[in-house]
Image (tube, rainbow, N blue to C red; front, side):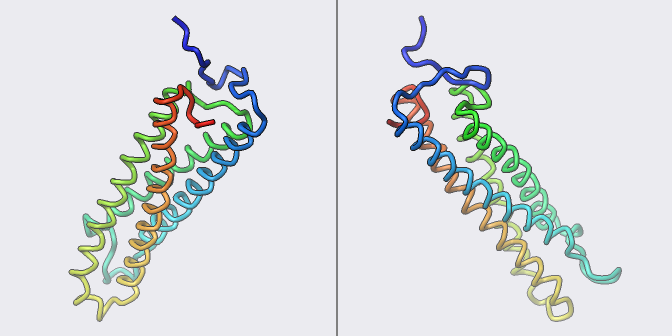
Length: 186
């Protein structure tokens, strides 16, 4: 039996909304999600770059000698790549007025991955924070290393904040889909 409300996917261009006000609200909502995904991308990428370039000379400390700092780098790099993909999907959705995947897959994909990657960032940056606290005694000799590590961790926490907000919005879309059969409440 067919669903009373058609699902929009990349190949389907049928309009689901009747009102232009509803379409404008959906575009505004998707644009807001795009802004938060862009912020998560920027902060995660900056954190990964700061951690990657955190080496001073051959005899000093290197970030890759510490498991927690490798975890911070890897988690932020993964989230930056994921956020880049999600930004492309958001631009696709705004420009084409259709989701990249079938609608049910898209809402659950976004929500599930936002949750997983937000907790990945939180755990990585928490591990990095604990290591940075234990290295404070070493920081008298290598102050630049410790400051750059702290900056990378703070940028990672900012990425987590914006990804968490995106997760709230994608959770709202899941709830709307469960209630209405559409990812946006009209």
